Image (cartoon, rainbow, N blue to C red; front, side, top):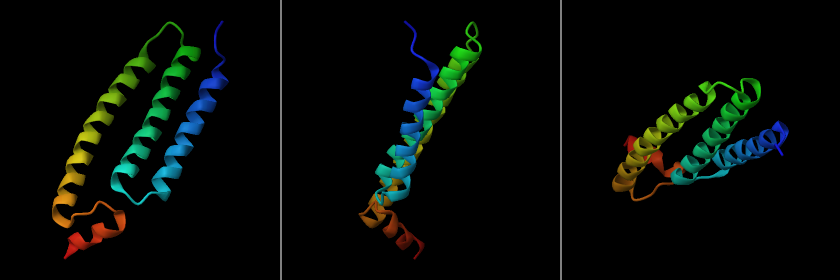
Length: 103
């Protein structure tokens, strides 16, 4: 029994909007980064699902998703390095306190 496409789309939509909500409402840089990763994973689910249902014999969506996951991992490593540097300078990772680095 195959799961309908709409089930994947609904899960992906909830994931994406949970990420958007977390991105907008959180003040901690790590929580914002996690929300951003949640949005990227929702997009990756859409790539795989649409590839599976629109082009069942081809693997472009899967390879594109693997490439997107690799880029997201690199982006996360760089973002965590930046957050660590911010913490070393101001001993806080709240978004409202980052403007202190200007002075």
